[in-house]
Amino acid sequence: MRIGIVQFAPEFGDKEYNLGTISAVLNKAEADLVVLPELCTTGYQFKDMEEVRALCEPVPGGESVRVFERVCRERNLFIVAGIGELAEEICYNASVLVGPEGHVGTYRKVHLFDEEKDWFRPGTQGFPVWDIGPVKIGMMVCFDWIFPESVRSLALAGADLICHPANLVLPYCPDAMITRSIENRVFTATANRTGREARGGKEPLTFIGRSQITDPKGNRLAVFGAEEEGLKIAEIDVPQARNKRITKRNDLWEDRRPDQYHA
Ligand code: ACM
Image 1 (cartoon, rainbow, N blue to C red):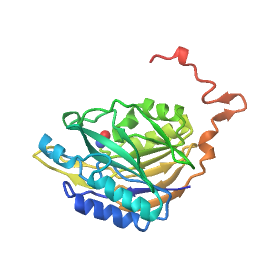
Image 2 (cartoon, rainbow, N blue to C red):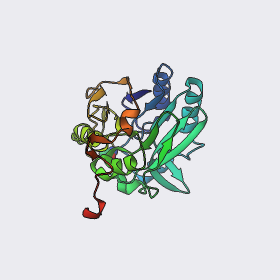
Image 3 (cartoon, rainbow, N blue to C red):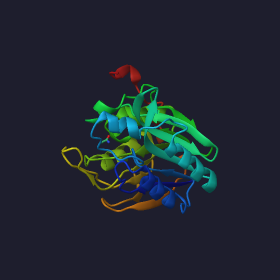
């Protein structure tokens, strides 16, 4: 199975430009599933709640998901993308899974980062897993990485591949995701953005790039530099994520001791 990650610098508030850039990349993608960054159609550093509300959209039915649906249908692929969701007047920092037959599912970011707490309601639907045939997919968004429970929950629910749209500003995540892969024996695909935003007189944000795909042994199968843009693809061997045996006498799931752990 061919997994792609896209790294680019969205223009704040310019959905037409962002969706155009994304469509141009995806129209050439020789991949089965492509992961895009967090809030990839809107940009990240909102000035106020009015901007957030104006840029969030219904899922499905909104402009971004309609474009993703068209590309997925035409290219026969799946997309995971971070977008702002508007549902009953509430805004969520969401990740959508779209396939050749349309919208498949939505994850709402559980662990909000910094100012996001002013803009978005945290998700309350946990960490679902979707079986799309060749692979079981879990989604999480950016800062969810710092809570090992996020990937653990997805892996325990059967995810083979963690799709991880991101707008990373802290430097630690790419290395931490190696550990997440090893300790859960899963593939991960982090699609981060590049560039800088300085809006509303706030502290400028520099996004670290360094998107990557990792395998259950912690190898990086694809990796971007800090400022590189475009699409990178790696082939993943899904059964590797279904083998949780570490030694003849150790199995990652059978050897867990939940009765010894704090919640
Ligand atoms: C982040 O969660 N966007 C840092």
